[in-house]
Image (cartoon, rainbow, N blue to C red; front, side, top):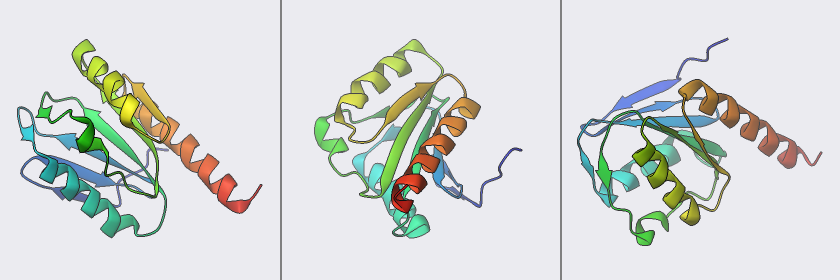
Length: 134
């Protein structure tokens, strides 16, 4: 059964969909994402999930640019349990593979959003089992 988002927030540079255990961001075609945009998304996640663990899916179906310096990846949410990137081009895949070196949680790339959602659901179940001490 297809899960629907609990909440959707549209900003001038991104659409963010919040689900029970993960969020999906889809950036607007052609934008240049400053670090402040990254921090805004992190702030939205903190407001929605609070202290609860959550996953992040970057739905990169549109071309956009962002700062790829290692410093821009240093501020990760402490309760983030996994990151998935959905890519449409080989260039997007190469960028995601570069970003992987700076990410401290499970990280995987996918060609489809449905595959990314399924993997994120699996990662969420693993977190629940670990928290339950099983």
